[in-house]
Amino acid sequence: MSLQDEIDNKSKEIQTDSYPMSIGELINMYKEEELEIHPEFQRFFRWSDAQKARLIESILLGIPIPPIFVAQGEGGIWDVIDGLQRLSTIFEFVGILKTEDGDCIPPSRLQATKFLPSLDNKVWDDKNNHENSFTSEQRINLKRSKFDINIIKKSSDSDAKYELFQRINSGGTNLTDQELRNCLLIMLNKNFYKWSKELSEFESFQNCIPLSEKQKLEQYEMEIVMRFIVYRHCDIEKISGKEDMGDFISDQLIKIIENADFDYDKEKKVFEDTFAYLDELLSENSFKKYDNAKNCFKGALLISVFEAIIVGFSENIDTIKVKDKEEIIEIIKSIYDSDTYKASTAKGIRPINRFKELTVNSRRIFGNG
Image 1 (cartoon, rainbow, N blue to C red):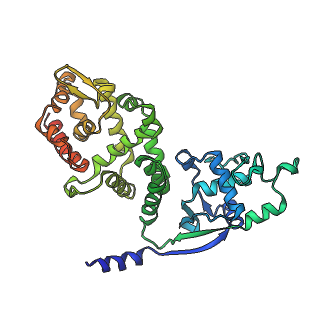
Image 2 (tube, rainbow, N blue to C red):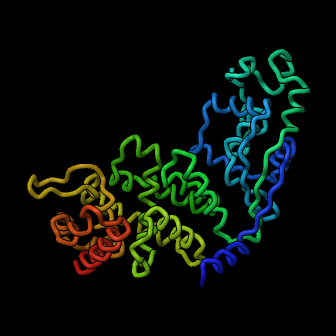
Image 3 (cartoon, helix red, strand yellow):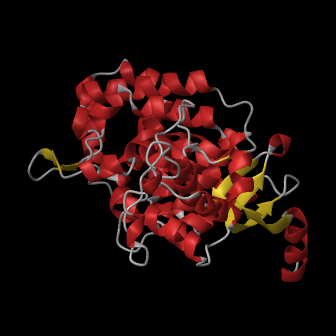
């Protein structure tokens, strides 16, 4: 297929539309639950009070605002792909923004801005203090201000909104791959996200993955859970070796989520059995590299160590548990001096190829062990 054929085919799959809409119309859509802004995302996207005030300032002064991207879902409901903080800021200021549980968030107060210092402490509508409120004219003018809305139609390719979300937000935020992936999971299948989150809170799992405060803030425990699931269910024979690891994990997760035969109960049992036993064996040393010279596990959690163990170990957990614990520990210790581990983790090796080689070796070691 030629490049032009690919362009023509994909252009037919991704159908879009765009037109301006007033803030008042968007407010009404949100009230009528025709606009979904995912309040769960607030934990990943957080604007400061100063940023919120600058947005209101820009709207009042007629400064152009970037467009809002939405995807049309079931029943015609719009799913916000990009514009969460802009819309959340407006809805919070107006006093209609709701939490995940459906409770209204108290209306926000503005800060002074560079061009409009009199915005300080202003609210949308304080019936008891008109001097501290926007005037009726100011409220009307703000609601008449418009955003350009770009819409991915329902008939578009099923992955289009997730791909667009990832591309837009990976370029304009400080989110990690996993924080972006969490947002994608919430958009794609909220129940899968909640199920994964419950796995990440399993006590033995937490004991096996000592994380820094920074890693905890960046949801790194969810990164480990996602890798556990993907590593166990992807077809490594189809890996070309050119894939980006972050994109590979996201793409494989979407396939798993869309697989109606995925057995959540079975996967949860394997997960809990695997980490419960690793907790018994090595606990916080489970994914640290063993130093033979110093006869100890040392350093921080390493993804390469996780990859060297997890697939073969989890796939054979029932047979591993009946073996002598010291024998299993010695098998794990021996991994890091092996030629396979050294070659797979050498400088310049792509993460996807490291994962592939270490997974094959992991299956060989624990499958035969």
